[in-house]
Length: 302
Image (cartoon, rainbow, N blue to C red; front, side):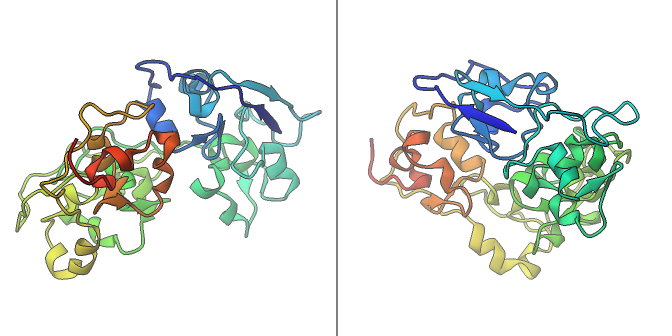
């Protein structure tokens, strides 16, 4: 198991740091908090350019004590596969724990235990040999976008795809009208080893609406079929333009380098408040964007 003593007062993220996948310390705040990982802990170490040594939220300037299992367990290094050495999911379960608990065996998820896989449990199937780490992993087609400039990353960040399928109520964003994201994006259903088809198709939205605000609604508005099939949902998520009396604090950034524009375009804020599930991006730990950004709740000018 992994125990962490946090000593990060006055810590500053390494300027300009990103891993080879383009993830910055700001991105890692969705995986780390208070100097340790709470999700996707396998995305650290050499293979991910050491976010734990560069990002305060992940443990930079922290003392980390690691206790490894006393002896190997079945499946820890079978067939040339090696477990991720630092893997512990957000519930404190490491690869050995997945075997002891009967969730994984011999490179496969035990039948009936599939619920213990995926994003909600830190992707043990990507980190632990006993759960299938040595299998071919799915990779997004990074050149793909649909005709509305929706990329695989946007399909995840804007809540269209989850765990290999469309999120509930977002099935309309798949298929030929949206250039088959399920064939190009792992989160939408692309399988390991599946081929990509390049960039998105041509064509224009059937009824393009004015762009209002940023974030999730910015590329949803005007998609074909949305007006007829998804009108209530569009209204639910469409941001309201800031009142003319409100002006974002000039040059404000939080300690991770995110600006008010980033808070809008990343979908953290809308309608003068925080999007459901994004409340963790508020408050003094994030330098109080609700005080500085109109889209997050600021009123008046300044």
